Length: 187
Ligand SMILES: [Mn+2]
Image 1 (cartoon, rainbow, N blue to C red):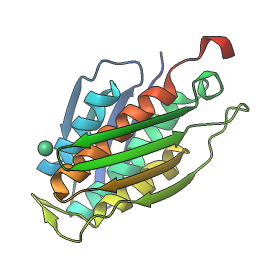
Image 2 (image 1 turned 180 degrees about the vertical axis):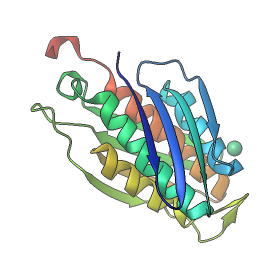
Image 3 (image 1 turned 180 degrees about the horizontal axis):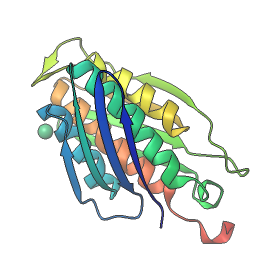
Image 4 (image 1 turned 90 degrees about the vertical axis):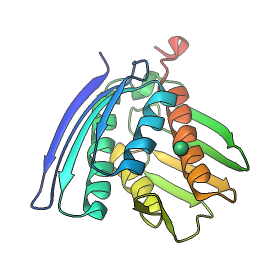
């Protein structure tokens, strides 16, 4: 089974993540931040990952950044041992009304190690969307990619920040679903 359970506790937050790579998009996400829950559920549903995630803490900034670290670690633990036998690369171009997000990932090399690198061209206006500050989105993606040990490129365009960010999380899920598929010809 390609899954992991990671609990991370600091003075500021406590985050628990259960991550099943070969899931069907079932998820239970509770961070106390509604828009963030919506984005993480979108990621799970379109990535067809089963994710149970609970996070609590003092400030929403801390909760989001520590969730990125814990989710990244859970992904890394779940993929450990199969990185070298996967499709390795995944990509998605996801439109959402007037917005579009294009995502490409590289989850590992033949040696089974990942390559941590992030390039983001999100064109997100500094604003609030629902109950988050949009400035946290690139920080979340950087931290997630660093702790998941993968290379992540995302390019996004659009007028509506809600649509643009949602397209980003859908594209990330779909790209990672493709990359994590077992490649039988490589096993
Ligand atoms: Mn939405």
